[in-house]
Image (tube, rainbow, N blue to C red):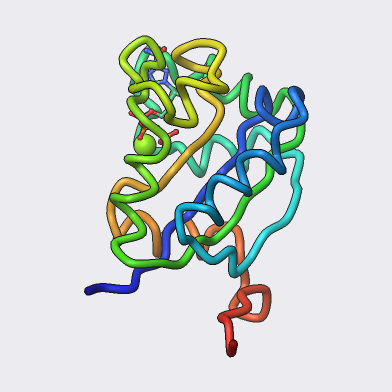
Length: 143
Ligand code: RTP
Ligand code: MG
């Protein structure tokens, strides 16, 4: 058993639909502990830096435009195999392929506006957590 941390974004389309609490409920029901969270309206520079790995992809500009179109909620989730279990809970990137009962099947509006982000590896998680949270903003549970 490996306790991991992963990084989550409730994207602007999901915030706009008023499902922050519903998504947090799904995290908690699945056994994740929310150990850091905050709401932000990303700047263009923040979104471009976060998605730098995709900068040459055709969807990059549209992705940055979407991610800066309204507030997001960024969080750190902790739990057993958190990276993969969180990806499983989100479902496929393209919501047309997302299994029933996943967050993207329930809350995505399109391939780009697919409701949530989750780190794709423990290395990405460490980088993404550091991108948005200082050590003092992360609150591991003592009970
Ligand atoms: P994420 O990073 O958001 O958790 O999603 P992911 O790993 O499943 O997908 P990734 O390949 O990292 O792509 C990042 C985000 O870019 C948007 N996207 N749009 N063809 C398209 O229209 C397209 N492809 C990707 C999605 O918002 C995706 O989550
Ligand atoms: Mg990704």
